[in-house]
Image 1 (cartoon, rainbow, N blue to C red):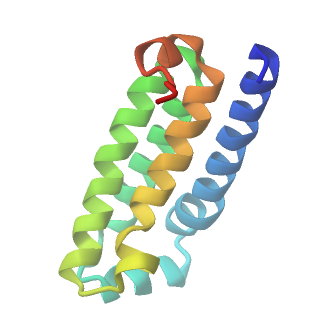
Image 2: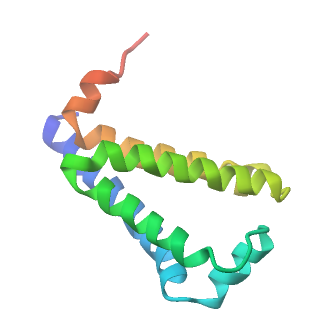
Length: 129
């Protein structure tokens, strides 16, 4: 795969990840939608944390999208996703659809960053066996 096509594919994955996060997670929290409050309550979160978590998610996405802070944003997002996974485990959610969803999302996020960032590819090269 050429450098240009890797970079373009990386930005497409990055855009899809960002759109998903903004549409499915950040917007419901920041807009005060009932679904966000209901979901957090079902997972055992006390009332009042929805807005703060939405702001943290938004900050992580913005840091991830900006090339100079993209790795920092990805690392912070993994911390956030780890907390989400722990919450799903504690709530007794299904393994493949809920608990591991944070892993799926993290792999998608890091995959997009790896494809669009040659420096990251140099640190973590793809090797054939």
